[in-house]
Each structure stands twice: as C-alpha cells, then as structure tokens.
Image (cartoon, rainbow, N blue to C red; front, top):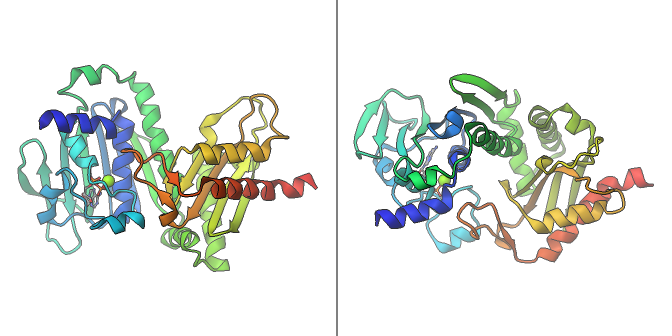
Length: 347
Ligand code: ADP
Ligand code: MG
C-alpha cells in the first residue's frame, strides 16, 4: 500500500515545482487574496505556501491528506462542470507519502488554528490567522533514487518560480510573494481594487462582465503581465479579444523584437487553468505564419474560456493537458482571435 501510494505520488509530484503548483491551486480554490510561497534550497528542503483563504474545518483536516479525499466534487456529474483547479483529491496525499507534510489551518468561525502533522497523524492547536499554511519538507527523503533525479537547487528554484508565474498571471487580483532562503525574491501585489478585478476576471469566464468590469479586468490583467513578464512584454504585444461559438479568448500576443526564440513567454489557460496544448499552440503559429521568420516564437498569454462540458480536464494527473470535445473549433477560434488582433496592422 505504501508502495502503491508512492507510485501514484510520482505522477503528481515530480519535483518541488509540482508541489508549488498543487499548493497554489489549493490556495486559489480556497479564494485566497494573499499567497506567500517560501522555499529553501530550491524547494527541495522546504516548500511552504501560506494563504488567507477560507481554511479547513478542524474535523476535515485529517481527511485532507487521505487519498481521493476532495471537498470539491461529489459526483461524476460535478467532474463535467468542475470549476476548481483541484478535484482529484490526490495532491496532499501524494506529498504526504514522499515528504514530511504539515498543515496548519483555521476557518473564520474557529477560535484557533489546528496543526496536523501528516507523519505522526497528531493534531494540536496552533496560532494561525484565517487561512492555511502547508509545509512540505525534505521532498523524496525516503526515496533516494527519486531524490537523485532532482537537478541543482537553482534549476529547481527556477521551476518553482515558473509555477508561481503561471498562477500569478491568471489571478491579477491576488498578491503573490516568493521567498527563497528567507529572502523576499518577488512580490506581485494584487490591484488595489483587487477583489473587484478578480471578480471581473471571473466575469470574463461567465460572460457576465459589463463594460466597466471588463475594463477593470483588462487593467488588472495588463498590470500583472507587466509585473510578471516585464514592461517589454506589453510593448511587444497587442490585445486579443474574441468571442464566437461559445468560446471566448482574452489576452495579449506579439512577436519579440529580438530574434531569439523564447518559448518561456507562451502562456495558455483554459478556464483559468494553465495548460500545454498543441492545438492552441499550433493555431497561434498558423495565424502568425507569414510574419514569423525562422525560429522566432510568438509570445502570448491567452485565456481561453469555454463551456467546461466541452473540455476534459481529467486527462493527466498533473492536469496540465486537456482534451477538447472538438479540437477543430478551438483551433479555428484561437486562429481567428489572433488574426483579428493582427488585422489592423496588416491593413
Ligand atoms: P483536491 O484539490 O483535488 O481536492 P488536494 O489533495 O489538493 O485535493 O486537497 C485535498 C482537500 O484539502 C481539498 O479538497 C480541500 O478540501 C482541502 N484543502 C487543501 N488545501 C487547502 C487550502 N489551502 N485551503 C482550504 N482547503 C484546502
Ligand atoms: Mg488540490
């Protein structure tokens, strides 16, 4: 059983950055507005994510680390329309089987926080603000063979930062801070009208945004892109807005002025989830076909919103791949979205 859970854990937790990704998903699913990521030795010694979300009720804390325990879906039908990042109930259990996991959490109606040590199973009261802190220490300490596959701390650290960037771009209303070895490395503040802006971003998703909330959401989105990707990303890119056939696409795209190929400036989200998707990547490239010379890579941050029933997100344990019911429709929507954005400069 320990063996089986370690094998399963391998599919979800490959490296410290996978821990960061899963913990951030949980923080955002808990409606956090401030998230602190603390790392030691590139995340190999410690990944800690603290959020100010709604917390875990004390009675549920021991359940949270059990396999296939999720509070997010109750039925197969829910899986078809899932709007949270998590739903498999695997991440915390996986971490508990390959690292030393501790969770401190407090809900708004509890008098104090509770700390669960997943190694001993002990629960004790702890001082904690409303929200949750998950600490993952000594990843793969009990599986030296897997620990050997980890790269140098600087490399693991870079992957962790990339995981935070992916989340930060999609949540401009949320503040993200990254600490490494006790030093603050990055801090991306949520917009002053933070909650409002993120509500507006959600409204993009539901198609319920008004002109006002839409412009608030665009302001928030652009500022976050400038913070995370640099002001030159904004200078080198143009806005993408597109909606047809129940597919909505928002974001920015461009071509780097320097001719170096950079695949690290390509971010694609489906219903708020960062994904790697060949259909979308291909559609962008084909829209750019006659302007991309040689190995130039377009840059983009694209948020594709589509009825969740038209996407299968349960394709891969890490949820980084999705399967569209109709890939051709998505391809053509993305292609049109980019061509539409480029059209004024072509005319
Ligand atoms: P999943 O996210 O797929 O449900 P996880 O293993 O990541 O599975 O988490 C298990 C459960 O623990 C979640 O369903 C949720 O109820 C709870 N949980 C985990 N992290 C947090 C958090 N930061 N805030 C509130 N609840 C959390
Ligand atoms: Mg989760």
